[in-house]
Length: 111
Image (cartoon, rainbow, N blue to C red; front, side, top):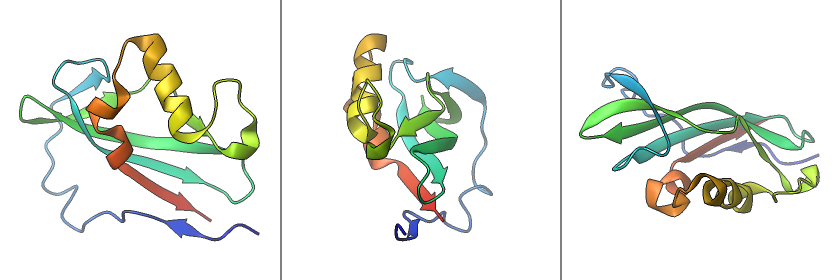
């Protein structure tokens, strides 16, 4: 059995202090992704994206990603798993993934 994961727990006032004004593509110039919430079950080969938040021009936004799941190593996905999967999708989309802040924004829960 895989160990239970709960990384980057949400701060109590996170949602209270947010004022989401729009939903934007991850291609938006100047976007900074601040939180990418992923959930999964032990043994399931994918992380499901629950939501992705960011800041654009000083305003809170919902980030629209071109994927709703990120493969784990066990998924044997043709575009790779984890960060490699995101980088490969980003290359196809013309996005510099690291520059968006997505890798620092991960929040994962696995039961």
